[in-house]
Structures are given as structure tokens and as C-alpha cells.
Length: 123
Image 1 (tube, helix red, strand yellow):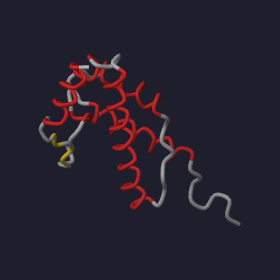
Image 2 (cartoon, rainbow, N blue to C red):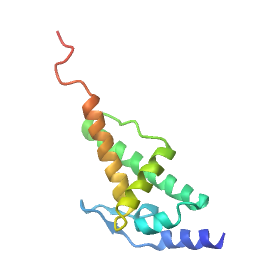
Image 3 (cartoon, rainbow, N blue to C red):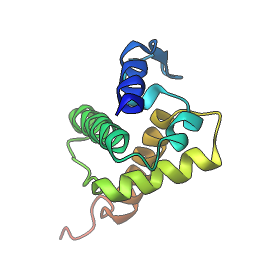
Image 4 (spheres, rainbow, N blue to C red):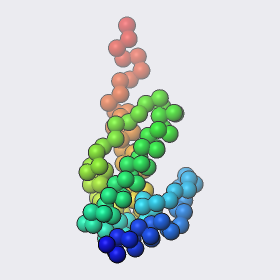
């Protein structure tokens, strides 16, 4: 329990991370991928990450819907966690937030591929 408390405290006081688009972000997704992987078997810490990732992806989805007039269907918690685990193992110098951005970009591409082309179905 002390390890979880120390980890949560570390997340709370971690500095603001700036993404490539200069948006300030804070929270669990801004730790290093190495730290994320180190705590992947801790269910308490996993719950913190899942909550943060779902909130972050939901926020992006709402923001993007204003521009695109579409909401993407987001994956379930287990799928998000698997994606971020793989991303962090493949990119240990990154942060989970970069994995979340990568996941969202992939979902957008899949959505575009399944969306009918303009004019299709019109007579």
C-alpha cells in the first residue's frame, strides 16, 4: 500500500508535460513509459492509469467532435491498456500520453476508412 501511495504522490506532484502541440497535460499519462511498465502488474496503479487514459481519450473525442461532427467509438478499458502497454514497451523513452495520442490517431484513420465517401448512396 505504501508503494501505491508513493506512486500516486509522485503522479500528483509530477510536473506539467508539454506535448508537441504545446498543450499542457498533467496526471498519470505524463510519467515515463518505463515507470508505466514498472507498475503494470499493480492493480491499484493500473486503475489510476485506466481512469486517466479513458478521461484523456474521452476529452480528445469531445474536442475533435466539435471539428468533425462525429464521435469515435472508443475501445474498452482492457483494449486501451493492452495498446498502451505495447506502445510503452516499443517506445520506452516516450510517455503513456503519446500512446494515447497514437491510439486516437489510429482510431481516426480506421473511422475514415469505414466512412462512406461523399456522394456515395445519393441518387
